[in-house]
Amino acid sequence: MQRMGMVIGLKSEKVAEYKELHANAWPGILEMISACNITNYSIFLKEPENLLFGYWEYTGEDFEADAAKMAADPLTRKWWDVCMPCQAPLETRKEGEWWAMMEEVFHHD
Image (cartoon, rainbow, N blue to C red; front, side, top):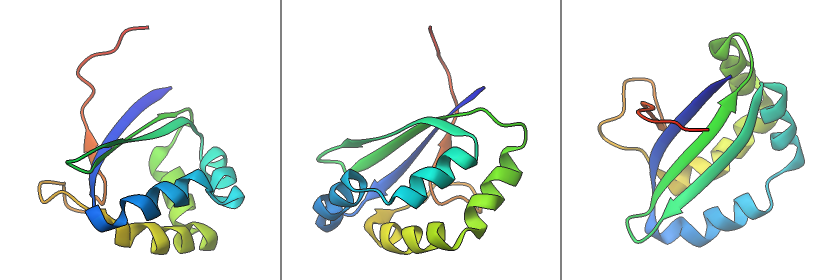
């Protein structure tokens, strides 16, 4: 299992919309997340800075393949079309990233 964390900004005028979207996440999206070996997925919001912190545990063997599977899913692409206009990617993210991936520097069970 691999723990993964990521961060992205959230546009201030989209906070309520983003919260509502995730309070009522589409069932097919949740199914695809699970099908791609992602578990224990949470998104946290820090206001007033409007930073989203995402965390999940990846239980598969090939994250790149599972990420490609998710990206190819038509329903996931529709979900992203709704969510992405709410988000403000960090300027410091790596090329090809939307959410900026984070390095795990500490863990304790």
